[in-house]
Length: 421
Image 1 (cartoon, rainbow, N blue to C red):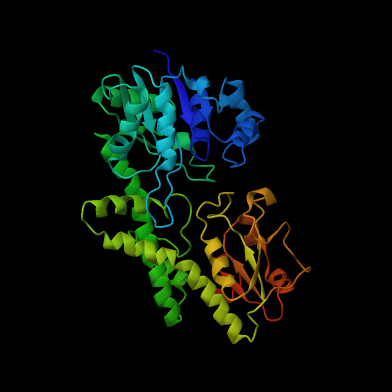
Image 2 (image 1 turned 90 degrees about the vertical axis):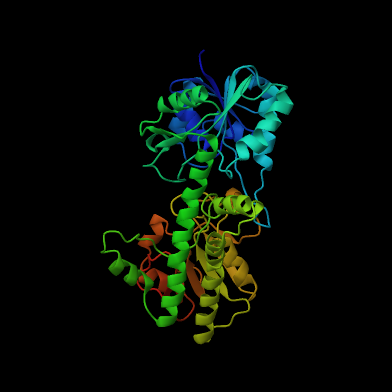
């Protein structure tokens, strides 16, 4: 049977995957966002994961971007790459993956395969998604249709570790389907694949990748809090400790984005439902979530010590994306810094050259250019390590400062910061 693939969800994960598959297969990209479909059909990708050339290349290869369910009815492989966020209580929000399963279920046919790439807790594919597919299609799982799970490992903004260059975990609902899923990905993934024995194993492998990183960063963040009270430069300590071959060299910072700051809650949710309290993982989340307040509080304390007024103070925030050199604002902890400063009635202005006005949340005071010599700020917080921010000189910081400069360096890129995380 010739593979006719539908990628459901055309964000940071789905679009690069669709592009990769389009070089060998007939591919449909499906998304419910009309504006997204329209811009892709015009050759533009706002996530900047694909260049205009690459989007047009996919279209030339026969890729079709659509929001019409009838267009995907003839596909026989459906790959779901929608977000799996958390709600305000830090509980898994499976709404996107549930709705996507309902959509696919409506067009599912005998012998079709549905592969999930969205990060979930172990068991979610078979316990949550499969029953929806059965209900919507009227077909029987592992008799009339099949499932696979191959977790995404996309790193937004990373032009080196692109989708085909990252080793892919694969799995299937039967041994035969597992091999088909593995062969499918193996045909485009130059880095190779790892066939997991079950879907649950593949789900668990994905969710612990980011949980492990979250816990490791939390340790460094806690050490940073301790060393700050001791008057010791944390980064100097890490540089020294990093000379040992097996020391994991991480730097303190904000933990945002759609993965590291979210995925651990999927694992803790499942663990707690089974009666186990994952104290270490939850503790790490608490530490990492507290870093925005720490940075805001440190800024305020330094302003007080230098006799700067707090009410109506002007503070410049350099960078608002969740990481450097990409336009992704999902779960950005810089927004939490701004909220904390608002508690002191400070006025924050944000500059981030990776974004344009339409990308930025309406409640932010967004400026389009670095205000060199044009405005004075009571404090400047360098929150994101974009490449161009590394080029800002001490003299330029002084030109933007009201009186004695207060430069809060979150990313360790400022030559002479007032305080560095």
